[in-house]
Length: 510
Image 1: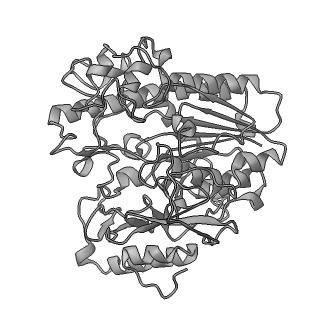
Image 2: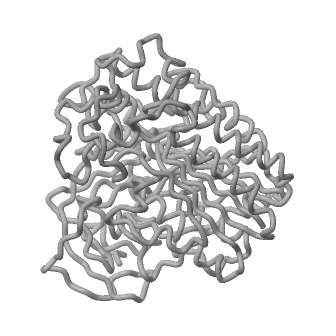
Image 3: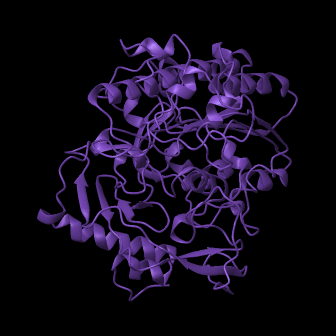
């Protein structure tokens, strides 16, 4: 088996004609469309642990981490996909511009691959130190009203990006073109291997939504270099504060997101061409998905702010799967699936089912046509915040009590709310066998919870796909979905503290 696993970061399902034709703009994605025509399209696929690296730990280790810990490293007891496949004689490769793999707080994700390619410079990637004070239009369109001191030494200085891209002129200079060009080249160079796993993690279409022409002007009549318009808005409410956006500013941000998606799609098409040219379709499984979406004014929010409820704009993610021998390749699959299931599924494709992580379920039986249903629930959220559950139709968003601390469980003393900075020791931590899915001793320590909404929210996504009408107060389904959340906690043996934070019954708490 050969397996190409592609993540397109922040890819919104509703910007793809395959899923939805009512997006803000008619975005051209001919290559994602042609792949969707070939592949099985999963209509009810949901994120799990958010945001970036928590999602990748789910994919690579099958661990629903957000109930136990925030953004952090691969744990010593984690069995990653590349580690498991090494034992089976499968060559593995990572191709990415996702710089979080190489930051404080997220080590261990790339080390198990036989090889990796890292395209430098996206977002805050600590790459270039010159020019000292950028003078390019990128710097002038950052969008932060009070950006960090360009001469400062903070770990997340937005001025890092205009330094990194200073001199970018051609389309080929940008990140998605580089990532997918390297993927195309890797496919051509590695014909001799009988079995391989190639994981392509494209940080595009993640912000900043900085793109060259023709994409910058493709979906707007504005001057794309107008210094009054930003391609990188701060996270938060669009009606107040630093993140406030006028109607024209918001329309411009959407246009740049759309332009970046079209550019990413074009270079993704080069990978499809390479599969065509190498006659690889008959021996290669290809999976395309995303970790989460991105608010572009939806529900009054921009970005992925910690204050916002987790609507489907973020949590409902695209998933396309081509398998040369699958009965349902080319079908639309309505069964509920979750991000954590990808771990078990990718390993199942190689027949390495025993190496799957503790929380995922292979959906290969769906692809083979052996069953129509897969799971009754999927839960998703950020560690320390609200916890959300869906049954594939209803989405139930359950608030937390931010006066009850969360508990972090890890072999590492992480910074629960400052992921990207050097870790600080916790002198109040206790150690023990606190994880139901691992025998390893871990540290356990408290950190503040944070609330996203005061009351439960419930949406019928069949009748109300945009989640505009909260029916929690007028529907018995809210009680049913609350019980489903408790069922999920019981099946996962969730920590007792989670029940306390969320005000859930604890009779069966682990």
